[in-house]
Length: 320
Image (cartoon, rainbow, N blue to C red):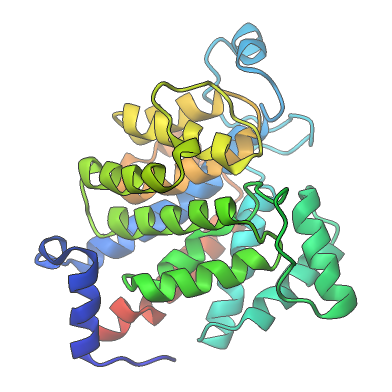
């Protein structure tokens, strides 16, 4: 386990937002971390039903789609998750088992997962994992076309394990992302999402999160989401535009998530990312019980276990 002294930890606090850390409550941190991971799985399971449908097709078939019923093009059971949650759990298991950051352990878990014939795996993720399996490659070459959302969707364990150290967040983020996606737009999306998760888990208001997003859009104007274009494809720009639009517009966990998945497109991934962000912001109290009861119990049990261990092994957990 990595141990850090109080002095560098205080420097970490100052780098992020010193006022935000004056009222740290580790129980609240754990609650928001659990809600982020469970929210991710819920968003994944909810959105998978309407993945690849258009917003108008969803409206025609369901009105407003808001229940976990399974089905969809993958013919899932109600509460079953897809590659979004499964790849995040691969990272979480690697960290928990090693009690340290090990990119090799993450890559090994991705390889074992791919060999298990998962219900779904994106093409770019598959290509990167197969390169590792065949050649031991742990950093795919830069590619202007690898700006999909496959690296962003699995960001949560990295955010939890690095909490609240922005430098560690960036290091772990880029390493895990480059296993499959080596693209500056993907990198920027992943880092911003990790920063938003750090802020939300630590209790920041939406206005503070919005300023963080404004920083992203100032550097990468393509991420601007006002006015919202209504695109929810697997391109990471479309993905985050959709998540940001509905997260900042929504007034509750379910409002954020329902709005997001009803855009259709890559709805399991937009749902997963919105779910982790809204879960981090609203906490466990904000997650509707009707959704939680529908989820795969084994998945939720593992999420509960690894989340607490990730927080405990983070710089925050080792101090408090």
